Every structure is written in structure tokens, then in C-alpha cells.
Image (cartoon, rainbow, N blue to C red):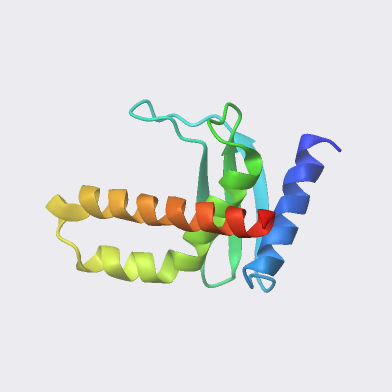
Length: 117
């Protein structure tokens, strides 16, 4: 199975497991421009049309399944995240983003561990 088919299958599998079947989720491999940290993935979301694009680094630090699950966790939290972000003072947003990333990483680890059991 080639990389693209593998990622598409992972998205479909996790989409169903996480109750996101009503979403149109696609992906693409990209080169991230950030130099302040190693970015393996990102997600772009259009909440109104329920469309999402998972961006996966051409040079990821993590396995593709971990990236897919992590970005789908962000999708699950999207509306909550943006509501909370709107309430936080600008000088506290860095701390908020660190907490959000930590929570998404923990949820990802739990979900992947559950799959293996």
C-alpha cells in the first residue's frame, strides 16, 4: 500500500471511530515554513461546510497515524478551542496553545493505546 492510500485509510478508520463521518476530510503532504519548532501536522477547518484538510509534513517527527489522530482530535475540539481562544488575553495565548497541544497529545496517546488493546 502506498503512502497516500495508507493515510486515506487511516483517516477513514479514525473518522468513523471518532464519530466524524459527516465530515469531508482530505489531506496533503506539505513542507512547513516554521523554524521555531518541528511541525509534523496541522489541520485547516471550514466548520460551516464540515470540511477539513489535514496537512502532513514531508519530513514528520511522528508516524502518520499519530499525526492523523492528533489532527482529528484538534478537529473534535475546534469550536471549543476557538471559543476559549476568544476569551483569553493576547499575552496568555502562548500558554493556552501549549496547554491545548498537551491535551491533544494526551488524547492522541490514549486513543492509540486503546486501539492496540
